[in-house]
Image 1 (cartoon, chains in turn blue, purple):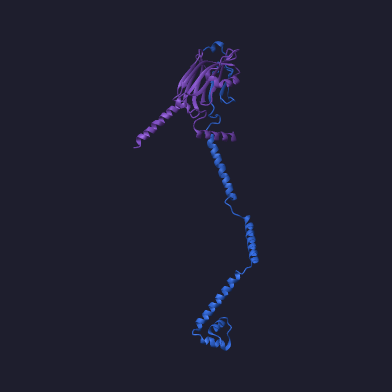
Image 2 (image 1 turned 135 degrees about the vertical axis):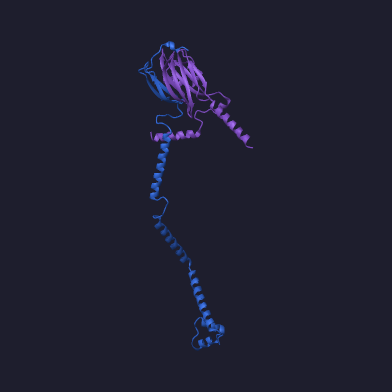
Length: 171
Length: 180
C-alpha cells in the first residue's frame, strides 16, 4: 500500500496510470491546483537540469573553451585592426598642415615687416645714410662692414678722400 | 588708504626710469693713426679696440687729437669733439631700444667733409675712416659707455636689456636666414 506522498511523487513523474491514476486524482481536493503544482515542479526540474548541465564542464573542456574564446577574440581584433578609426583622417591631416603653413607664413610676414631689408641687427651700429662732399672728393667711395672679432665694431670705410698735410694732425 | 603707497611706487618707478636713462655716455674721439718707430701707449678709451684698430688699419699708434665724453639723459643732446683743424659734431636725435640715433658731421675747419646718420648701438662701437693726414689716417671713433655710477655697475650688460625684445630679434634673424 503506497502512501499519499509516494502516489503524489509518482503522479508528478507521470508514472500513475489506469485505475490508480483515476483514484488518486479523485482523491485530490483541488485537481486544478494540483495540476498547476505539477507544471511548476516540471518547470523547476527542467530549469535545474539545464543549469546543472551548463556547469558540468570538465577541466579539459573548460581549458579548451577558454582557448577558443581567446583565439576568437584575437581574430576579431586583428580583423578590425586595419579599419581602426582615428581622429587623424586624411582630410584633417591636410587641413591641419595647411593651417600650420598659413600661420607660419603670417608670422614670418609680420616678423619680416618689423624691420626693413637693409637693416642690420640691433646689436650692431647701423649706418643709415652717409654722404661725402662730392665737390672736394669726387672719387670718394664708401663701404660699411663689421669687424670679425668680438668687439662688434661697425666700420664706415671711406676711400678717395682728399689727402691733407700732416699739420692737420695737430691737437 | 592705498593712494600714498601708489604715489610712492610711481615715484620710485620714475626715479628708476630716470636713473636707467642716465647710465650711458658717448665717447667721441678724433684719432690720428700712424706708424712710428716707437709707438706711444694707446689711450685708455681705445684700449678695448686696440687690436681691432690695428687689424683694420695696420697702424701701430693711435693718438687722440680731440675728444668728447657726453652723458646722455634725454638722448637728444648735441656735442662737439674738436682738434685744431677738425671738429666732429654729434647731434643725438633720440634713443631707441638698440642705441642712439645720431647725426654726425666731420668738419675740416668750416667745410663738411663727411656726414652720416647712424644708429649707434650700446654694444657696438663705430669707427669711421676719415681722410689721410700726412703719413697717418684720421679716424673717428664713437663708443657708448656705461657711466661709472654705483647703480650702473649692477646693470652692466652688453646686450639690450629687454629679454622679450632680444628673443624676438633672435626669432627674426632665424626667419631671415630662412627667407634671405
